[in-house]
Length: 326
Ligand code: PMV
Image 1 (spheres, helix red, strand yellow):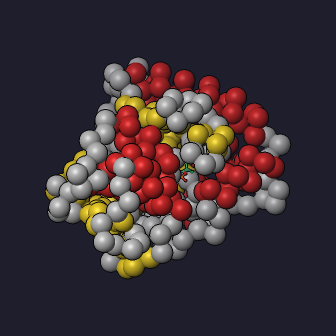
Image 2: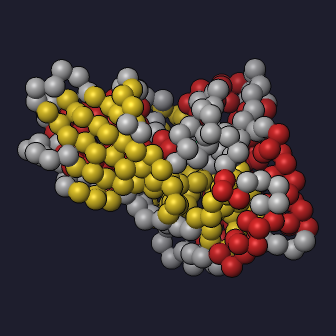
Image 3: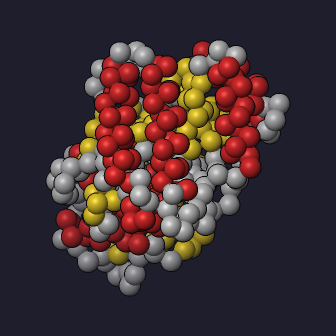
């Protein structure tokens, strides 16, 4: 039964320490390799959904502005309609507490919140694993935001086997990520386009698949053995190898700007001074610094000498997607 009132769900972004970069199946989003992320408390999306039988088409508002239905949103809504056996269209209102399309994974929180709110509003009561599969159809990284804390998305080989799950027995739970927001404008090459070009044209793609599988094992072991240095180091290496796939594509492309390089330098300075901190960068110029909670204020203070402190946000681990109103 369709829910009479709008269903409101909240999902938090996640930042990958072992990156997903490339699809094996573009239609249902099966990745080329497994990935690992931390769900963050400070960045999230609230999405309200209501299905109406007499609506002619889906109505989508993001940050109070009406937008045409995107492919990502359509993928989730169509699957929900199929599962719930309904032809009703949806009214969707989504508010991002994340800078949209600036490499801070608003698609992860957005599509994950949409998966939970729309499935519930359509009368479905999906397990977390099924929600992860559903969110994956909208955006790969959204499959991980269904869960809180450290989360692995196992590659799998079909719809059933490709889903995310929380890492059991992680002893590294006092980790923060510091986001330095240097540019809010949407990126020129979407992650979807960027991945496609890297898979098709980078001569290093095969090597990436091999090393990223090893990196994942290293990172999960580090999480389970309270080994922050190993985790940070492998995250940094893995991120740079992902960006090597953009630089080695044909034609080449790059998500960094001048400020990105500047922050990498500053983190290298801090490392040289013995501070345990590491950087990671996604499909945009923003940098996220991985550190232990006890060091985050000190690192923020240092970065604030060079960047606006209001644009430097510290976040600890956050919860999985949840309903706020039903
Ligand atoms: O699922 P998408 O399209 O948001 O792609 C995410 C890609 C990266 O953020 C660069 C890496 C990752 O694993 O989140």
